[in-house]
Amino acid sequence: MINSSPAAPILNRLSNASSAEEFFSLLGVDYDPKIVNVARLHILKRMGQYFAKEQFSGATEPEIRARCKAMLEQAYADFVASPPIDQRVFKVLKDAVAGPGKPTGFVPLSELK
Image 1 (cartoon, rainbow, N blue to C red):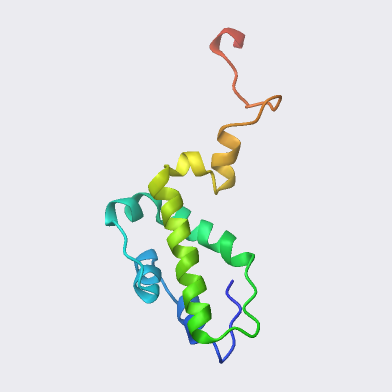
Image 2 (image 1 turned 135 degrees about the vertical axis):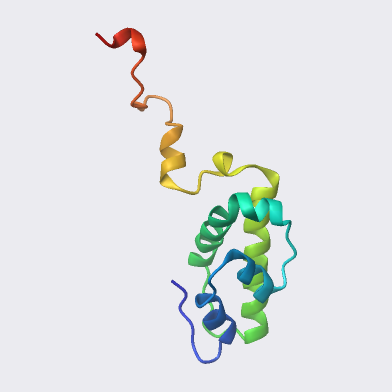
């Protein structure tokens, strides 16, 4: 997922991280364990969405680290401000609340015979 170069050891370390807490630790981002316990996958998915928009070519290690830290802080803040169901980063949550005119797959009991 993370493209890195020899000039970007933080990207290598992040690509080898095995937990949300490790991401927070590597980037020096403070967090509330209660929020991370509920939204860890959502936070990392959102960070990945932000990360996909970034271009690190020519950036120095401190710049890359600062940008990664800012992405994690923003992703975390998204889930401090509202719960995962409201953010809908995963398809299953997006599909749970279909937009206007989209079938929801709901069949009322009155329709069953």
